[in-house]
Image (cartoon, helix red, strand yellow):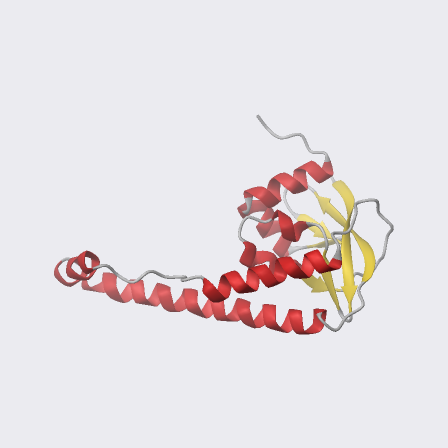
Length: 172
């Protein structure tokens, strides 16, 4: 069964910014994934747009959190000793994980910087897009959205909000 509703977006130059879900994700750094290409079809919906300034402030908040967040913790002395005596590859694998996290953090920051530079010089237009769910995948504008589907499966707050919007009764 296909469940659908219309959700608000802002069209800003050649991009589309979700104007509903950015305040409804668990991990604020993932807000950047709620920016996409323009919709093929425009609708008129009744869900209110979050004010543009508030939306931009959420993205600025996410960027600042990434700038100050220490995405890795240093290895403790116990971990270093344990890795040397029991498992030398532990230390190496831990450092590899830290490097991966730092690479992701820098990539997110790059995306936020690019988006905010465009958003600060934009007169956004209000549009609505179709959000649909078929019990397996989430669709935006009648196309499978890999991002929204992954958020639906991995982010409890996002998941609950999609179900609420679509009027899907929670399983008990």
